[in-house]
Picture 1 (tube, rainbow, N blue to C red):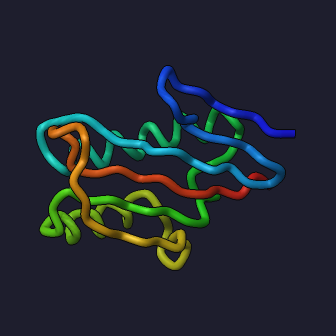
Picture 2 (cartoon, rainbow, N blue to C red):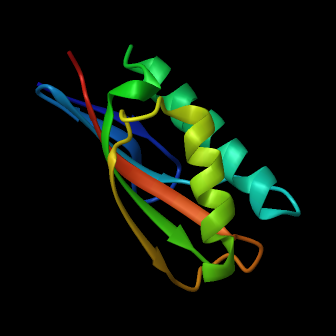
Length: 113
C-alpha cells in the first residue's frame, strides 16, 4: 500500500511505501538561514507525525543550500535535532531556488518501524 501526503502543487510532501517514508521538499520561511532551517525541521516533524514516524527515524537527507557560507550553521543546527552518533546519511549541495527568498531545502527518507 502507498500513502501520499499531497500538496496543491505537483509533488507530495511525503510518500509512504512499505517501511519507508520518502520526504519531498521541506523549506522554512524567515529572514535568516537559521530561521529557515529551524522551520524546515518543524515542517519535517509535522509531516512525519502525520505518519507516526519520529524525526530520529530519518535515515537519509539531502540539504540544498543557496549559500555555502551557511554550511557551519547547518552543521550546528543538525546537532540540535539528532543525537551524537545518530545522524542520518547526508548529502549537502548548493543551488539556486525558484523562490528568491529561499535559503535552504531538505528532502530525505525515513524508516517506518
